[in-house]
Amino acid sequence: MTTEGSRPTGFDPQRDVMLDARNLRGLAHPLRARMLGILREEGPATATMLARRLGESSAATSYHLRQLAEFGFVVDDAERGRGRERWWRSAHRSTYFNSDAAVSEETALLGTEYLRNVVRGAAARMEAWVDALPNVEPAWRDVGTMSDYRMLLTLDQARALVAQLDEIGLAARADGGDSTDPAARPVSFQFQVLPSLHAVLDRDQPDDADSD
Image 1 (spheres, helix red, strand yellow):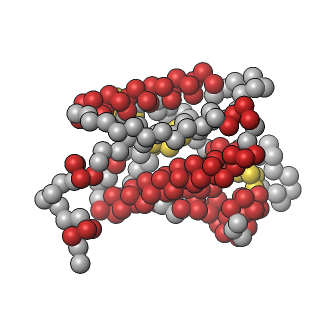
Image 2: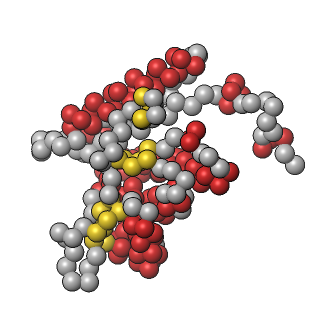
């Protein structure tokens, strides 16, 4: 996400969460990151429902839901719970992370693991789309795209590109987030702006390729 001063673009403190040295621990585990993503995309669920969805035991999903709750990422959905059945929902709309905010080696490592989980989630979403294409509604089949454009940009131009994409995504979220149109479908808008590593690596720092 681009930032406006110290405030990320589109960040709403009433609806979104900023990761810091403490709560990063809650999302460093890949299963927790997947579970939180499902709760946000598909709505509230029980530990048993998440276990079936992810091919895990209900004991594992129940444990990780409690961990997510401890760090403030999920809360009880009291309106759905009946008897011993415990429903959970995401406490926030979106998660924001500033990699420059890592104040210790531990925070930097946790932040890197969190970003790996984000990448895994994005890749899994794309693979699931490709796998399901034969069964997708024909009218929606060609809507999804996984385009790749090669560019030569200055640092300022790259920042401007990210800002433009953020603006598009935030505008669409604002326009369609509460749509009651029966023709509307949930859509994930994900993009990556990744400088070519051979051009931006700090050559004064050792990289994995040079290590024994």
